[in-house]
Length: 227
Image (cartoon, rainbow, N blue to C red; front, side, top):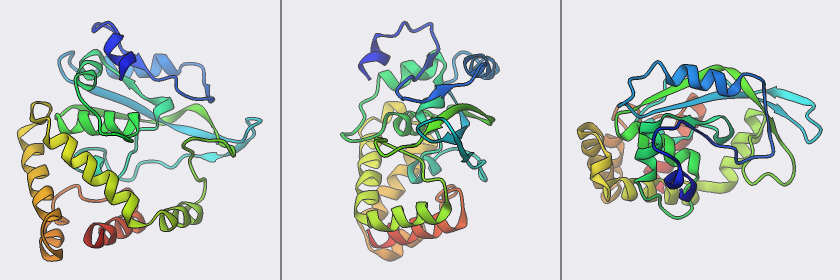
């Protein structure tokens, strides 16, 4: 956040917060994609990755998005992997003027703020990064669905719902960042979290209250109801 606030407001921004390898053309693809969005509209570009081991030997490609990015789906799951993210000047300025809750991941917060403001997310289906997976990853990408499911079950609802509530609270505390639609959605979600399971069940009927796969969505809905 300090670096974003120090960045000239006329520049696009690419996060280089990793031990991964950018493929040739990564920046050019991001710049070209962001150039399709009007300058006054906040826009975030992100892309798929080739998952590799410590020696850059291939493991697999990250999955394609099955559902479009947006809000409030951005509350349930981050689809913007930080080492691929680029922001146009309007998005960089928007995020730099926000206050993220403690412990929020920078890429997830960018995705949240930009979608809650009614901005654009440009998800590139072409991998642009060799995303290195090893035992010392601060944040990694489990490269199989069983591993992802096991990791999620081990974490349980408490950690996830703690992050979920923190994001809801932080966004509601900064109404100037939000579109009118996002403010209304956040108010409904916040009210449901303060009430019982029936209210939460109704909130799950809001458009966008899902994750990328049916299994992830089922787990999210369970956690939202009990967490």
